[in-house]
Image (cartoon, rainbow, N blue to C red; front, side):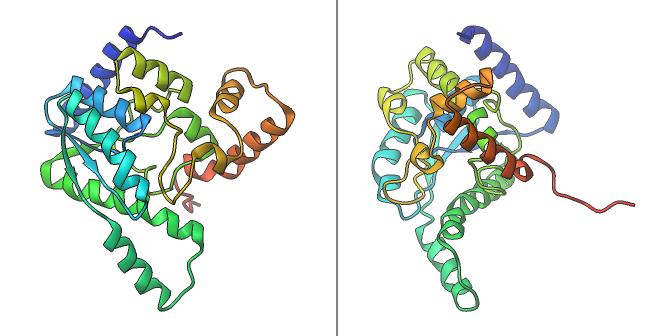
Length: 242
C-alpha cells in the first residue's frame, strides 16, 4: 500500500506549484458525487482556499439523486464551495438542432454531457481565473474510458497516476463519506449505467493487469483491445509536418 500521508503532501505541493506557475487564483472541478471527483476536491481544498466544485446534473435521475447527495456530503465535510448548473436543457437544445440536419448515435448523445460539463467548467474557470482540475484515474485512462474533449480536458490532474484501487485506499485514509467508497462507479450518463458493465471488465481486473500484466485471458484481451483502440485519446492530435 502507498504511503498516503506522503502522497497527500506531494500532491498538495503539485497543486500549489500549478497555481503559482499559472498565476491562477483558484481551482474549479466537476463535483459528480463519485470517488474520483471527491478525491480531487479534497486534495485541491487542502492545497488552496479558493476551490469551487460544480455539480452538473444532466437528464439522468441518478445525477439529481444519489450523485448530487454524495457530492454535497463531500463539499460539506471538507468545506468546499459548490454551485449547481443543470445542463439538461442545454443538451436537449443541442440535440434538437443537430437532429434537424443529421442523425446522432446513442453513444454520441451520451458524450454530449461530458463536453457540456467541460464547457461549463472552462467558462466559469476563465471568468474567475481558476484552473480546471481533471478527475480521471489511471485505470480509466488506460482503458480510454473517458470522453475526448469532455472529462479528458483539464489544466491539471492530481490523481492521473492512481488506479481505482489506489483511489479507494486514499479516500479511506482521508475519511471520505462512506457511500462514496461503497457505491458502484458510474459516469451517470444514462439510467442504470455502471463503468464496469459498460467496459465488460472489473476495475480489479484492470488494476491487476496494469500492475502485473497478467489476468484471465478473456479479460486481458478486452483490456488490451480497449487500450489499443483508445490510444488517440491519450495522444496529442495528429498534425501534418514536412
